[in-house]
Image (cartoon, rainbow, N blue to C red; front, side, top):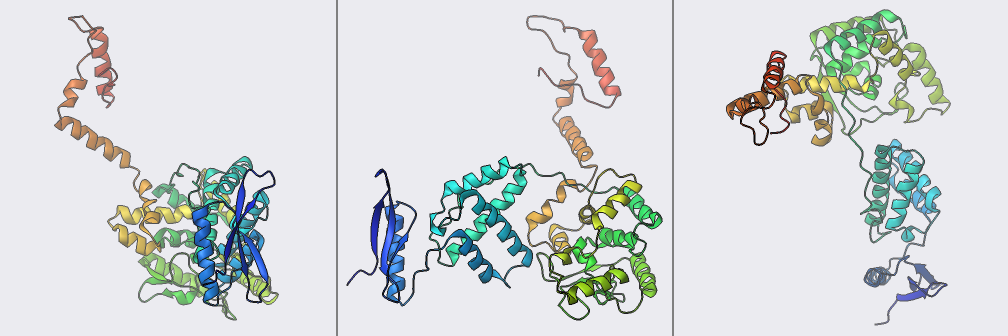
Length: 426
């Protein structure tokens, strides 16, 4: 049987290396050559055999494309399957990658290019956590190419992401929560926007900022005392919005919050379906929608100057630092501390995996260190190690304790202060 695809080892200009090419005829009978971008004989033969099968089955080899063409192709194929924000992330990261290594052929991208990209990002001042995320995006993009038959292997598969320390999980104390709500109610910041109710909702339901700001009055079931976190369709009155991670869920409302929302609803003018979007802002958004100036990215925070006003309330409450998302972290931590199981918290929070939920467990209780210290004390007592810790040190070759009086004095002072003596030298 005649071979439809042949391998060609094309030498470099200096004759020191070579690159494999595929020689074949397309569906129009035109002779073509396609660079494989490597010199791996086994890999090249696998690629040749696959193209051979495709041609015999009536398939065609995708024309060699640069990274820009691949990005456009990937965006078109992925549109409607992933969120618009994900597509924007694809574009930004790939364009940055192209700026670093050039618009290479898709099949010419190698492991070393990934390492060059990491170093370039770090040299620009990107934080390791930011670079970690970018490498994850690139891995996903090239994996899509593998799954779609455009690549045999993922060049970013073994590219190691830079290590970064985990951020400390911040939760608000009970006193800080009280001061936040009190300051929001008394400060007058955003008079048409009820920050105090928004804070209470976040602390009671654990909802994200985008979920709260895209909540409509129809989502609130006053009789069942719960709120439905649900996606929104693009209608004359609502804009399209999708939930992160999960499709929909329901979370409970407290008695006080139900009464507060009922009073707040009675004060609202007719025609605005959103709970936390003031009438003037809602009218402005509707105008932007009619002018085709509204997009899915703006739906994540429909309010303007949200972060700046939140910082003003933090300052008014005497809190040095914090984010709105810390209210959600505080709620999830309280749920777990008051008896909810891991799966329960994951379900109520709308997380798609346990790993995301576990990140909140690191800051569940402020007395976690105290509990561990008490457990250690009990453990030492059980093992009779505490008696050894009280013994003064002896110098080598001496029959009496060295500085015995000083050691005893130090032991008494530490015991009186509630601490165990130091263990150095044991």
